[in-house]
Image (cartoon, rainbow, N blue to C red; front, side):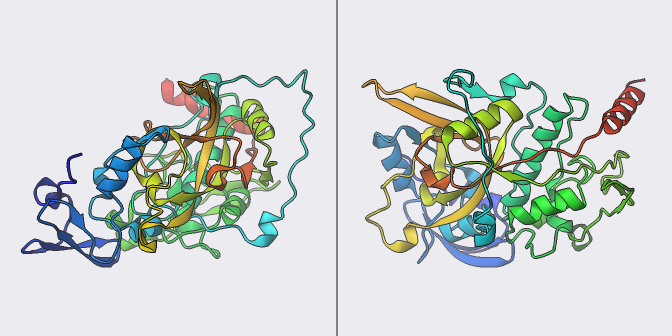
Length: 385
């Protein structure tokens, strides 16, 4: 396999100061010494690189059921940086982990689940595409906004199809939250229920490197208008957008760890949010059904790390190996852009709690009234005239 080129074109991808074959690469506020080796590969000194060519080769040579690839957006980053800046969901506190699961009484006769299901096919135009969190550890905000966007669109039968703003959560949900340094999904759902957020177009995402100090502060406030509903008191940060409607949710609910109950919930009500552990090999996933591999098990500890992430599960399916063995999977949306994985999505083994993806799964309803749907229809018709 060809080495990761780092001495030519990819130098121009990173701001920094050259010195012979050494370069200091800034990632948000930290500086790490990255050396370009004689063989044209990144040498991250004492740290494992996020892109390790031998990991990619080993996955693609082995019979792991998925393929690995290079990603230019990860060039020059250490594995530590990947864990620190590309994930960002804190593990829920014990009190949250002990939250009661909803009881779902499934009838084996009536509740027949298909072998394959994809929310985007059942609800066309209502399932939003994956966004890119960049080097901002805020999967807590991206996954929450993604699930709420789809659920509101489905629940309103397409009268309201907002792509909700992760930036609104990152900048404004600051109570015990860390913005781009990590946060909790329970805090995000509290904010969505009690304060609400506007759309991505109204309050666009700005990666940390592109965010002036004034954009980092909260630029959207709302006030109560009774019955728990909120109304924006500021204009959209995007001055070309005048639709500053506030969208809210009801309290989230926890699903059982039983795969069939998670499947039934997705089929009936739409995508769900899941917390998962991301290991070093997940960053180079390209296609197939992901399972954490043993390719780094013989390496020193700095090559074997993991962190907590959150994603949106949109469906499921199964495949058969050449030997006839069945391989079941979830379909999930990541928040690393559409050039990562299967157009921003990944498939991961289902029914065996792979990377703890079935351990803490959340569903939610939007806070929607008939009045909301009528007012959105009115705005929509007025824009078309």
